[in-house]
Length: 558
Image (cartoon, rainbow, N blue to C red; front, top):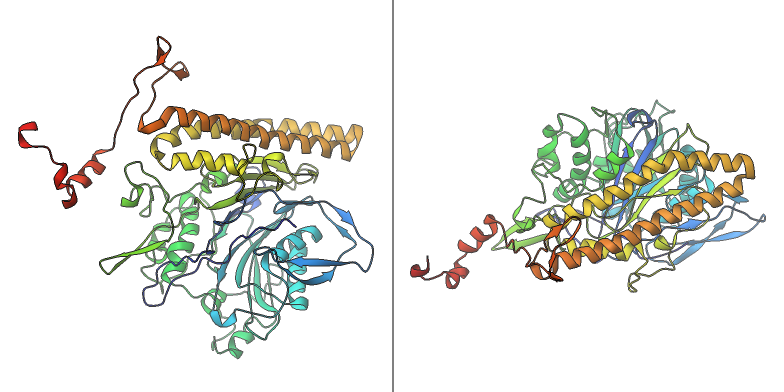
């Protein structure tokens, strides 16, 4: 298992001030969900941003293998790379590409921590190991739930509160889990199936409310999910009124504003009437009615819709990050950490949107029951921030990661000109300085590449099935492996050209003139560039600042 430090927690702040707190390893992930009846083509679609300041964006891969009976496997903690113990290996595993396998099962997560009294449980299974072991062993979402919960029951759970998205080509579930605290083994958990015609999501805040204990088809839970809470003095009511979220991860300002608000933004894009939840998700009314776990969208969503939603900064909402004072003169929708600050005794908080600069990798998994497993599962994968990355198609059967996404190509401390993570970061970090200008140059290239992938998708899949019919499955897998690699590597090369273009065009605060697709020259020299300066709002802020008194021109110069 490729192991790099990822993330521990994005947690609400103190009960008194209740602002968002970020520790050196504190980060957050966003998961969006679209049921097959809510998608334009009948796909199950889920997304995930692995957000961390120390995670290198690479594509994980475990090949399908057979093992002799009696073999043990090491359990390695995903966040730290530490060895935690051993469990018996199974006789056969499936091919795993990132967070998806060849059988069209995909699993993602977001951490919410939960009650401090339940931290430090006994066991060897961390949330990352649960995900990647389950992907190697599961042919359906329900089977993955069984694998994960049985491992926790037998070997203990060593992580804090977690939400998992567990999907296959037919259905998608949310499972929420939290350990039992020091000296206790195992975890309490609940899982529910999201209706096919609905969209859902989670983002570092537990979201499951009341449990339908009678509906065994669409609900699963640990036998002690309620009784454990009573035993610990966390709950005294009836089973019917028990809320997993309220008991194990109560709302705080930070949990709402920094986490639940991201799910609201997704719902708000595709479902009318979500404004009524604004006082809740903005953290002003922590005891208000919770948002529903899922909503029925006003229209069906495509893969492209989900990809673009992963680029969200609350645009056109009261939390729009391009419009508050922190955006500066170039409307930058990013805020450097820490998330909160204080001026003259007044506390302030920066927004935490779905798209964020510290993303290691981002994915949109497309699972299709109307196609053979050879071509049905696609992991649309990108390194770095979804806002500026390119989602490249990685088929579930491929046998190796492309060079652009390879763990052998660069690292968090080693730059590489062929690494998608580093090239995308190069482009993005240039854009932070002149965002409203540069994003207009980035978007066409991004769209051109992604549109081409979608245009070629039916042809590629048809050819792969023809190859499988004529030359066998292995030949088709080799073809899809080459194709996936070409998409990622060519997109990275194109973005390198884009980075060069941006550097030349915007060097030193100028903007070079262009004509017929090239920089304008005269007598072999670049024409004098535009010097757009800043917008009026920025100049006004300077004029109104007492520290700018010395910048005023004499009256005779007016």
